[in-house]
Amino acid sequence: MSPRHLRLLAPAAAVAAVAALSLVPTATALTHASQDRSTAASTRPTPCAKPTEQEPDSSQKYELTSGDLERSYVLRLPEGYERRADWPLIVAYHGRGSTGVEVEGYSELSDLPAVVAYPDGAIGTGSGYRKAWQGAPYEAPGVDDVAFTSDLLAAIEADHCIDTTRVYATGKSNGAGLAALLACRLPGTFAAVAPVAPALYPGTRTGCAEAPPTPILEIHGVADATIPYAGDADRDLPAIPEWVQGWADHNGCTASATRTNRDVETTRWSGCDQGAEVQHVAVDGGGHVWPGGDIYSGGGHVTHTIESATVIWDFFSRHRLTSEG
Image 1 (cartoon, one colour):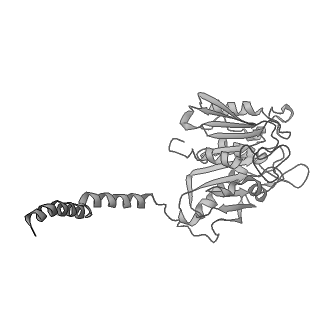
Image 2: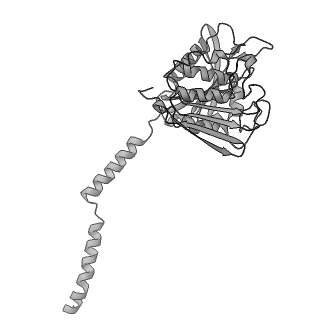
């Protein structure tokens, strides 16, 4: 081969050599790759280590004894439950005369990435053989649903993979009134509470003045004929805007903003102590219903501008318990 050919081939050989070297991982590249794998491993969810006979993506009825009474609840485990050890838990309380099964049917809460409990109330007083919750004038005499809730949470958390910093309460009507009461009577238990069309009798407001700041979301139909939006003096039910504003003041909120989307007006209070924001969703023309539901949940107009389960989950997802409260 001539010297001229050698001179022409030399640059090409050098390029090939450099290219070959570039394919060999350096110590820095190997270190970064190792760190990436380590980070991925550390962020990968820990599998649930508490065995249960209940299948993921299913609902099952359970019983427990609380206050010498046999109580029942439906528990929903989400899809993929066995692959995580830190599931949030939502407790959803039915209205007077309803059941946990019915709430699961119309609320769509079981579609959320959370464990959901649907407890049943005890038979209350008044007309009919209807289940009810503590805090209302028709509550079951001598039944402590605050204590039952503590027993319920203890039973679920003992046998299931629950993140106790992300436990939430919601409900409708009489059950929503109990959810509001729990924010006051079980401080440090629920990271946020979301009552829907709550029946806020005086019994649901006991202990609230001394309660720590708690994130509250309230959803209500302005045309609710059962629990009037403007309140009912004869039953000592407060006007809903005043009750929500009371929580905003209690939580030390300093600012509010309102947004309207068709028939839904949403007000958010911010700058609250310990991040305990307050949110109110008013449905113009809405009845005593679970907004967005496709199954009957009560009388009156049902809006589909929002889905209550989606609004509630968005609110809950922003809050968890901390060492501050």
